[in-house]
Image 1 (cartoon, rainbow, N blue to C red):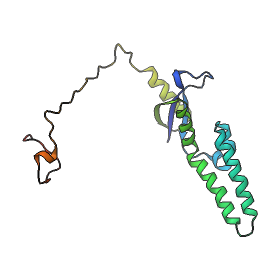
Image 2: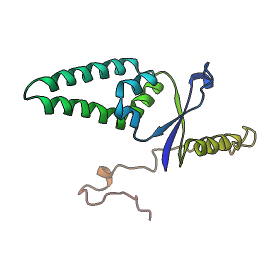
Image 3: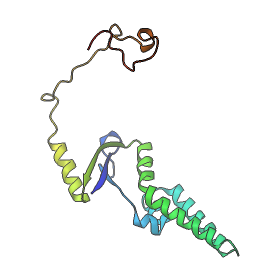
Image 4: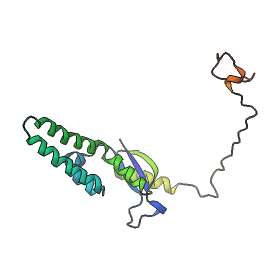
Length: 163
């Protein structure tokens, strides 16, 4: 099963008609194989350029005598980071642009996640039929500090003589 984060565009509607957006929270194989293409396809331009630069530097480092393993490890590290954390980077990028996380759905595939999300959205009650939530007010009269009532500090909770 995969967790899907449902992100909604700012102001409730995306001008390109992409609202809501479902982002799977799992490993990205394309991000692992070609990180800069995956980052560019998801419009993470700065990170795509950085990935190209790191891959070029890792390739150049692997041609230097004695640093072959270091160059390969740099390229592998970039691939693993993009594969594992690329979707997290995408989610952070979208939320910084104003997208909001509306739901997290666990489903075997995207079609099932969309079905679950849109069926729950259709079942939401209207404001007239919604359950009224009570407003709990706290007062400091019945609350006493632990240090005030238990000078020795023997008890974790103070019940003020109540059970």
